[in-house]
Length: 277
Ligand SMILES: [Zn+2]
Image 1 (cartoon, helix red, strand yellow):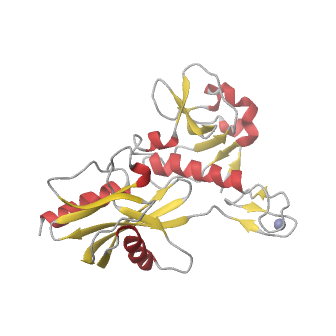
Image 2 (image 1 turned 90 degrees about the vertical axis):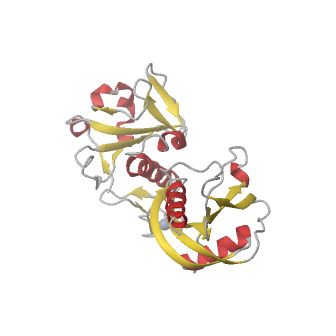
Image 3 (image 1 turned 120 degrees about the horizontal axis):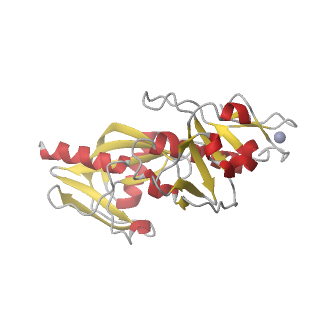
């Protein structure tokens, strides 16, 4: 559900404002996060009133009563004192509380609206459905919903060691993490784990255990986490994907992702598992 707003109902209470401009997020320099404000506190939004949408209410009790408005300024840039633009990724890692439920979700909705302006079936202009999050084609009746792309992410252990890999894209950061990859059409989550692990590092795994999941808004993944046990094979890194992969002892770990990411949580869980062996 995305509700178009009138000026009157926008200003009834304070709201969280997720404002995108040129693919980045507009934040208040003073607080270094998204504003919690009345509409009248944000005069530069006056000319964007038709582009303001309210996200569905949040489920967590801390934020349930605060409306969340999202605005896409597209390629427009706001030159306003006290405001700056930051990459979405940098805010996600600092705003633990609202990172995925507010900011990540807002970005996924905006990405959906941007990429579904025309019907994928007949090419006519699509229109937003007022009462659910969808784009509808009035010529052929085709309706599109925000895409969610499942990805598996898996932590592998063998006795008291954990297998971590450095992706080609994270070479600069020298960051070692769990393995991850998109689920292919017609594949189960478990099949995707076995295939990805073998493709990326050449080993076999067994005894998969579901761990947790996390939406990942780049642009619309759902990370489904597993912990697996090593079953056989020698490490062989996939060209163009994995720069290096190794077995690490718990007391001699490389640089790993922060706990806010599911990768960081999987590593933490696996370490506690192998330290109890
Ligand atoms: Zn159509």
